[in-house]
Image (cartoon, rainbow, N blue to C red; front, side, top):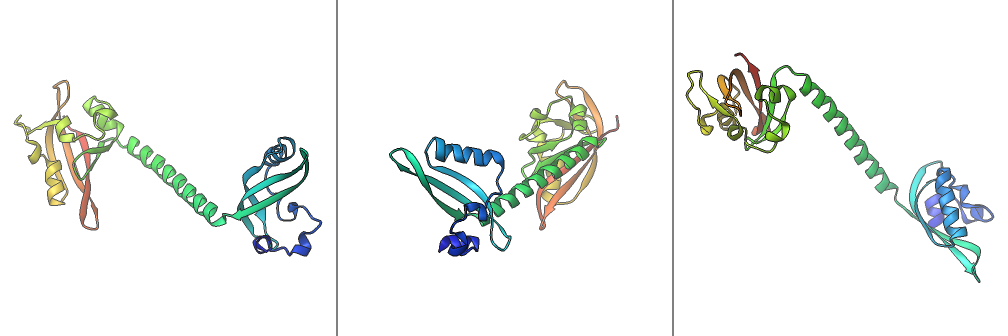
Length: 222
């Protein structure tokens, strides 16, 4: 009865027919492996199968085919199917969403890489989560030197008069507390102690009124 419900074919329609009545939609390699397993190796076969109901609707099932042996001779088969259409549909939707996100990230990365100013994204703890090639070039450092680290600890800053700016008074930290964008002129100290003057804009990333991070743009004006 379950087979009739799943396929839409009656028992009378099935008798004398093969499962191709509702199957036969898999590729050649699938059926080659299946027949080799159940007829030559004489072992049970398990696999995910794509079938078509009597009304033309496609469904997916986990199939199990077990050979019936008589003195080591195959004299028939017992097959069962467990419909998994809903699961397969959900998996395909997740896969499509993942592909869309990867495509969107590639586009986003390409846009970020093409920007002529340094761009750095920070989380709510002022740790770097992304940095573009222009910023890396400005500081003469590598991607791994920044990611997951506090920008204010990695890069020191001074006023135009050469006075060091404490971490808590850095514009990046102030914007995180005030939730308001801010543009400043700072002198950044590179790892080799060389310096450059930059126009720096820090803009909060707001989600429902809460700051989730800061986007920082840096333009060398030395």
